[in-house]
Structures are given as C-alpha cells and as structure tokens.
Length: 282
Ligand SMILES: [Zn+2]
Image (cartoon, rainbow, N blue to C red; front, side):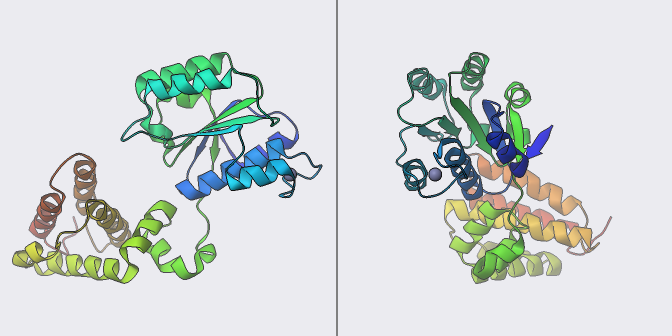
C-alpha cells in the first residue's frame, strides 16, 4: 500500500516514520525537493517544522548538512560497493542532526547484490536513520525491496505550475523529467520534428525518412521517441491510430536504452509505421 506525501509528513510530526521509504512518481527534481522537505522536517529545531530559518533547515537547503547522504548510480548501476560504503558510515554516531537521511537516487538501478545488502541494513536499521529509495517507476524496483519499504507516491505537479514551460509539460504527457528534456531540446524544434514524422508516416513518403533525423545527440533520440509515444498514445485514444503504432514505439524505446545505432533504430521505426499505413485503425 502506498501513502501520500501529505500523510507521510503527518507521520513525521507524530514521530512514527518507517526507516525504509520508497518515494516514487513525478520527476527527479520534484522527488529531491520532497526529500529535502522531509529532511528539514526531521531535523528542524523549531516547533513549526520546517521553519526554513534554523541552522539545520539552512544547511539542508544549501546541501551542506553532514547527516544527509545521496547515492547515485556510477555509470549505469548502483553497485554493492556503494551500499557497503554507505553501510560503514551509517552505523557510526550521527554528526549533528536529529536524523540521518540517506537518499538512493534512481533506486531502480540497484544491482541485485546491492539491493540484498540494503535489505540486510533494513533488518538491523541504524539508529536515527531514514533510508529513502527514489525512482520514477515503482515497478522497476526489485520486488523484495519494494515489499519491505513504505511506498510514498508523489504526483506530478499540475499544468498550472509550469507557466513558461507549460507547452513542454503538455508535450511530455505530464512527465516532469521528459518535460525538462524537451525544454532543453527546444519545444518548437520538437513540435516540428513530431509533425514531420507524423506527416511522413501518413503520406508514406519513405524517402523523407532518411532526412528526418539529421544527427541528433544520443540523448535526443530517446527524448524524441518518448515524446512520440505521448503523441501517439493521445492519437490512439482519439481513435486516430491503431494501438500497434504504440507497441512498436515501446520496442524501439527498449532498443534505444541499449547500445544501438539510434538513428537507424528510429528510421526502422518510421519505416514500420509507414508499412502500417498512417491512418489505419484495426
Ligand atoms: Zn528549522
């Protein structure tokens, strides 16, 4: 059972917080801010927490609090050596805070060995220590770890909070991480690319496919494909495309996460989409 962030804050105030939490949903930045808010509530020395003014609150805000640790993947995964290094620190005496907070960012990247080492820690939790696993998709977390942690769902911020970035946010289908990547790539450029792609698969002009993706950055192929998935899903829900278009995109997304020739993978996708006929509905 997962709980909401609001209920979690209530648990903090009532001093009944689990020591292994799993924060999922929304975007990486939103989750990190939620962790900071939680850390401040746990360590604030004033009555109304977090006050934002006391030394603990200030240090947490500026990222200089000695009892807050953040673990991130080295390259593609979080290995057992990282968990063992963390373990060595967290059984020591706490420096100055009331609580030590260990955030494990992109917790879906924990190797099996690392996850098992973490489970061992959870069996004998160090005093005054909260371990927070953070990830976008809870399904991607190793099941034994998922079942041990108190899950907290963080919803995406509403469209109204995005102001200048509202267009990127709506192109992302409400995914803050994707919205930021689209913003970086350029909203207009992304809209043009999506438009051209859809025109080509509808007209079936396959020669144009090869002019479609002039050497994008590696990361941009993935961003484009994720944005395409959002647009296509929307078209399917309106009955304008067959669901088969989306399942092909899913396969391409898997390929792009591996070491493949990205441009080729997308051109193959476009040719498959053309072969389905742009408007065909099963
Ligand atoms: Zn404070």
